[in-house]
Length: 320
Ligand code: GLV
Image (cartoon, rainbow, N blue to C red):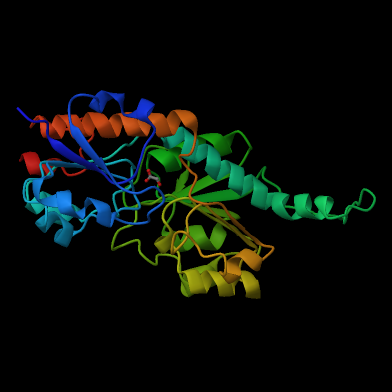
């Protein structure tokens, strides 16, 4: 019997996908291509599985060109690149990779929060470029952490892992979430959280209710000294409003792991601001996390091809 045809939207290290060896026929998209590689298009009619990265858009139109598809396995915890409803309607289970990137993403969140609070990019640049005079009592002053309030928007696994880390710094915790959870953090409405927090960190999924969640109105209600961290998805924050907020001092600083669009073009005015730190969507970029994400994506894929329940299924209602 011939092996099932699987489309891997972007190349992955061989050692991360050994589980697929000998079990599937793989067609692989182009390295560095932001989207679904046209090279894979001719294989869609016969494809039984897709292993996608978050940069590949898997929409209704693509699904309609792949009538034999039995599973979509996304190598990410977020699935906003996939039309979930269209998958479900077609009875296609959608796999994702929760848990294994929680620590890496929470670590990165704290790294950019601390970098922004203590003005690391700016002070490092000043040192490198000869602007480090003598030790200055008032030079590069940053924000205090102990006693400050961190407001976490989206208290899921990653939000809770950020809270766990922040406790170690003596930070007071607040969160806003559709559902109240068991936590020592104070549950606030989004508005109360924005008004009272010294740091605001976003960890909600991107969906129709969170797209543009932080716009001009919300940025203007934040403290002028506040630092905004986005390690969720770029479109949760309105990019133009953020630019104004940083230029005009509605808030003090933004630390962004995600932007809208991605990649953020080098011509973006956000790069020229001293009070904006941007890193290229590296929340889960540790050796261990990325390998486990790929391994889980393979496990989901193989289960879907075998007609078994995916170990990490985003749309379990397909089995109802
Ligand atoms: C990364 O952003 C992910 O969703 O896994």
